[in-house]
Image (tube, rainbow, N blue to C red):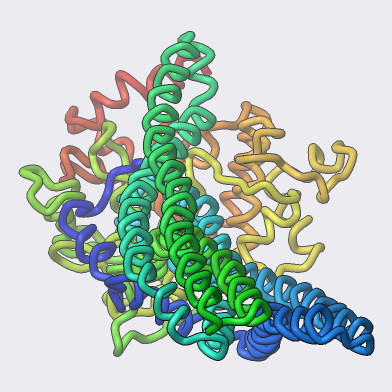
Length: 610
């Protein structure tokens, strides 16, 4: 996802990223969507968790209710039998509460982990199916931040926030019922403060969401800086840029910290604000209850039970204010997560798309007045009015200065981008009328900079065709002059290549990439100077292998070396996105045009040095 040239990033980004399938607006909409798309997948777990939550929530009001008989029957009426029964009842309630609390926490936390895993799967599927325009429009560091940091916030929100809100709300309702049974007048007095608490909670929630949104953006920025520093570590070391890189990271960490501290302060203010209002209510309630008691309208046991319920109710109220801030953080994270999930590629199969099937002896390619620009308003397109045909089994070389459009033609043939004008056809079929999967299944690509994944050598080769047998993998490696160095390693084909294949030399990486193309056995080959990273001996071996591989297959080669173009059926010389000239090597030299100049300044150096 590095910032490569983007196909109409300005033209398509808003259409792809800013138009989700189901745009989620508002907190409740986000909660509803989480429930509909993810919680619903785990209804059994949720059902057991709700039952456990109900039992836990009911136990707290029950404990407060037992205070009145304890005082009235034991201390006032002096009943000895209650001295055993009431403590046993309390112990039983506490045991049930402990068991239900454990079950509830285990199920809720497990549910949160499963939901986050589901969202991460959906995020990855959405990202990996996007076209290059969309992928290049967003830095990989920002995407990683959403996968990890935002997912962590969502997990906390689900496990502590949303689930906790439900449990505390049920507990508070139960305690309110006990209080109403005890004394409805005192209950109404205690409820006066709830609107004020709700207002404070809502205000703090809004403040936290704003801070969290900015904090998440700064986290994405820092992730971007970190990933770029790691990817460019060789340049940083070579140019002595450690201080510069550290200064950039320091600035972004400080900016991120500023918003995170705002969130911390807002979250910290929630409980004290609630305690302030709660303390005022308790003071006034005691005053009113004392007045009633002095006039004989309220017994000690009655008042004690009510006071116990009210004091116990303070904890759910405190927790509700704190948990709402946690939920607000999760909702902000969910918004960003759903932006990723809702993103859709601009290059998709047409409803009438058919699967490409290249018969034996097929594979003709036609570029018909192809025009394309990476930016829709670009004055000079990347390719402009390019037309040429390749017969089945031909080898065509593309030559030209940097930026002439050679790699762009590869990208268009693979439908990484769609043409702005004209058409590209394979065996007469416009590639836009073919399914993407079938089109790319018939093409093998070897890039100048080989791309390997942090897996085993065998797994990297098998990515060319995932059902390839071990014998086929070894045969491809042998043909690509890779088998000997692979077997010289301690783990052979099971050797892990490391991040980007960094445990291997450049030539070794390239030979594995060539083996991957060989095992694919596709009728169309795209070679971006596939032997450029090889030493002379390995290059001779691979050139022979590529000669066998290209036999009977349509091949396009981006050429940087003379040896690559000498046996080409035709050479197309590109300049500023147009075909400047074409012909064989000798014909082009005789014309004394651009190809001849490129030969004099580039190819001739290889011939002399060789």
